[in-house]
Amino acid sequence: MEKEFVCDKCGLCCRNLQLSCLYDDLNRGDGICKHLDLATNLCRIYTQRPIKCNVNMGYMLFKDSMTIEEYYINNYEFCKWLKRKSRGL
Ligand code: SF4
Ligand code: SF4
Image (cartoon, rainbow, N blue to C red; front, side, top):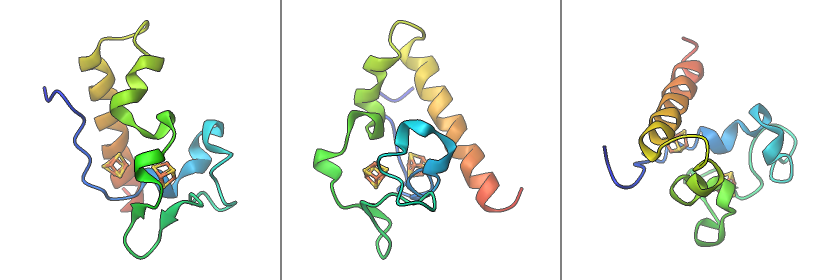
């Protein structure tokens, strides 16, 4: 297991904020984050993004309920699910 979460920058999590009310403040109304650069698929505030958008730092919110390994597995599973969903699978 990697020591840091590996993101392939697909941008799908930033385009599906409707899946969690935790991201309502970032959702521009159609599920897409107001900080996402639509041309590059990258976050325009990446270095200042909220902890809830930073998988590695976000573990502090879950450290009492799961191990870091479980946390990464859950995140990778969510990424895979989003990719399947985007392909209509
Ligand atoms: S869905 Fe996963 S792989 Fe894609 S940008 Fe988000 S965290 Fe990275
Ligand atoms: S702030 Fe950045 S990382 Fe967070 S959802 Fe928006 S574009 Fe994605």
